[in-house]
Length: 622
Image (tube, rainbow, N blue to C red; front, side, top):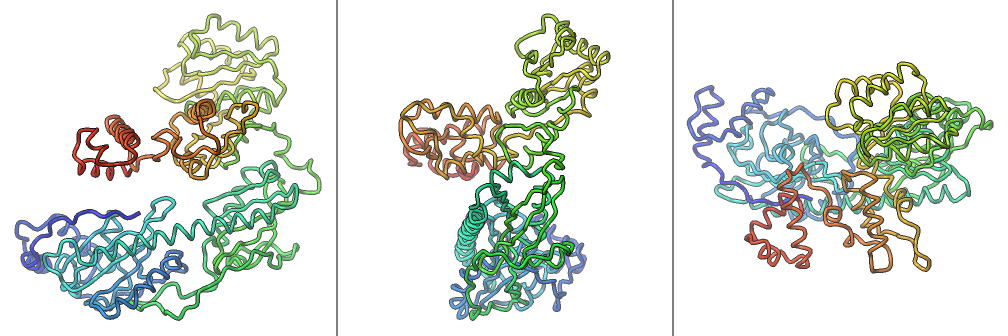
């Protein structure tokens, strides 16, 4: 969402106009010219922008614009009101290419590209750089044709990740002393409405993709994958069949087939300041179906299928089989693909089918890649090192790897429980044919590490599994051990790097329900909060939360977002906070919760002014 903040006091325009003339003629500037304005003028000179520019170069129009598709209904509602005024409304993409404009204002007849490389300093470029509302007036601009123009711009942010997608600009005649710009409210409201349209469309396309996936997966045992670049849906059969390499190929195929591309409307980019054609018909949703597939004997031609209009067959790596890939379209645009995977006729030729099965929850690509590598290394009874942050599941994976290869009675040593009394038992256990699982190798005493190094020197093929949590710099002995095992190591991803796995982890982490009580379930809002939380304690932290809710909640039904701890419920901060700021943020959240969200009462309870509370809420993005 865009945020409104007070505009700073602007410098007097007459002295600034004189300073600009001195800058353009190479004379020394007077005192008092804001540094940021001088820097903007210098950037324009560095880019080679002519201040008397009259014929800007024609930019290459964007091939497609999901932003304009979403913004068009909002903009077309505003266009009639702008026609009778003396201001203009402009929409740009993230490269500041003008996608749409309406209205009339001074100096807007050439505004087809608002990047600083083309036209120098302007409000759209400033808003894009600062991610906040920005104003530029008269002589603050570099171009002569904008010396009598005041403009305000607001960034348009993607609802799912906050990425800047473009800007909305309102330009009018020079308004001296106007703070904020008279068009600021219009620009803010337009950007907010466009962001709401983007959010609604994002949810709509997710539903369309889900419907297509469910239709394709209706056949029992079907191996189906649906992808759109942001979401990945796999049926149980596909999760058990696809290797990480095959999933990566399907991801690239979805991107190559232009997810989000509009195949029917080539007028997404308008010429310099040309208003949108109000007669453009509204496109309707097209049903999901299978187009005629490419002939099996024909090689896959990515250029032929890049427009997303034809289904085709794709051979997957690792002997996985053949994927029949079908584009999914909505409102004339390709929003993703659905792939139905058929295994090869001879299942025995699949290399990854011979690997040990790792029955741990998680289907994300980072997790599958890490566990597949660990399973491949664990096929031989040689040393294996599992690294990762605390709580990522290193010990659970190690036990599963041992079980999968038939080591059912390993000797387990936990260095976190204290010094190892008799390192000689390691050699005894290994000599007796037992595997050795050594947990928390980073906590080993130096003497124990030295003994372990000696053991590996004598038996480099020892069936040894170590778990290691990076932290403080290791000593020389431990570093030697890590270097020895580096070639046979696998790093487990943190939970924040695989949020897609949280929904699968939850039922595995929940304790068995008490007889007569239903299993723990979750509302969609609560699941989204869990997926956004950074989980510094990884799976261990999530497990504690799930068990606490299962044991102590007093209400029935799915777990709601309001039942989650404050830090999980409110989402992560938008920047790295200091320990003091974290404590302050926690106190504010607790006070707001205690007073039912009433900010005045929360501020009084904290002993601060209400304005201070509002400022801190903005700073912590609460």
